[in-house]
Image (cartoon, rainbow, N blue to C red; front, side):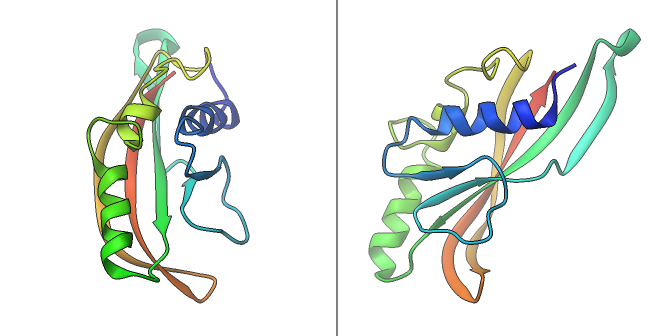
Length: 135
């Protein structure tokens, strides 16, 4: 069984393909946008396959962009929300579905909660992606 730390690190490594994005494989104390934060598992389903074959994890990935210019921040977030392309969160996370050998499969299943997020008393435009990992 893979460790959650290795899974989070693998997601972070895959997101490193987006050169404009600062990526944290943990929840940091402060952020500098544009930032992706690989969060703490929101779901751990044990024994997803028979005989302890695999567990299923849902890992949130939060992406935050600056709100200095409303149009620019929305267009930047649009690029991250795209299902394909060089800045697509989905494309980059799924670029190595084994997460460097830590998982059997990885897929981004949804993007939700697009809106304003307050992090350390600063408002950012952001979105939460849900990443399903079988390991």
